[in-house]
Length: 270
Ligand code: SF4
Image (cartoon, rainbow, N blue to C red; front, side, top):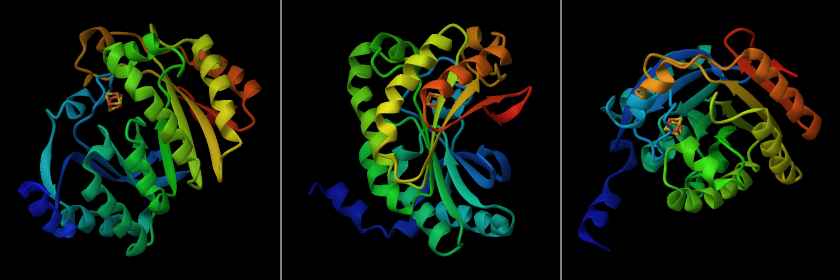
C-alpha cells in the first residue's frame, strides 16, 4: 500500500474533515413530504452549464469543516426534522466523511438519511444503501442519447459514454433503498416534453426491481443569480404548463407516482 494511503487509512474517520458550502437546519423542499437538515457539499464531477449551484460545484464556495462541527449542528436540529439530507455538488466524492455523517445521524440521532446524487458513483451508492432511507438521483437526459446527455452535463461525449453505464448501475443500486426519487430538470433549450417521454420509457424497465417506493419528479429550471454561465443565468424559467404537460406524459407511461416541481405550484403529484 502506498505510504499516503496507509497513513490515510489510519486516521479515525471521526477525525475527518469535509468540504462544504453550508447547511440549512430546517428545509421543507429537499425530501418529498418531509423536513430535513440539509448539507451542501462542495465539488462536482459534472459541469452542467445550467447548474444552480455552480460556484460550489466548481469548489469556489468551500470551507473545510470538521465532521464533529456538523454533527453538533445536526444534533441541535434533530428534534425538528425527519431527515439528514446531503446534496451538493456531488456528495459521493467525499465518501468517508459522508458515510460517517450518515451513519451517525441514523444510528445515534435517530434521523432518517438521504443523499442527492448525479449517479456517477455507483460503487459509493452501493456501499451506502444499507444506511440510506432516501436517494434523490438525477436522470438528466435520455440514457440512450449520449449527445444530449453530454450537452446537459457539460462534458465531452467520450467521458459521458463512460458515465452513462455508471448512472444505470446507480439507479439499480438505489432501487434497494426504501425511497428512491428520480429527478429530471427541464432545462429550456436542452430537455423538452419528448425527452421526458423517452426518459420515462427507459425508467419503466427498472421499476420492477424496486424494493421500496419510487417516484419520478419533473423539475422546472429556474435561473438563479448564482448560475455562473451567463446564458442560463439570464434565461427564462421553464413554463410551468410545460412541466405539468411533461409530468402528465410520464405518468401515462410509468406505474409509479409522478410529481412536478415548480415555483408557481410547489411539488404536486399528477
Ligand atoms: S451534477 Fe448537479 S451539482 Fe453537479 S454540475 Fe450538474 S447540476 Fe451542478
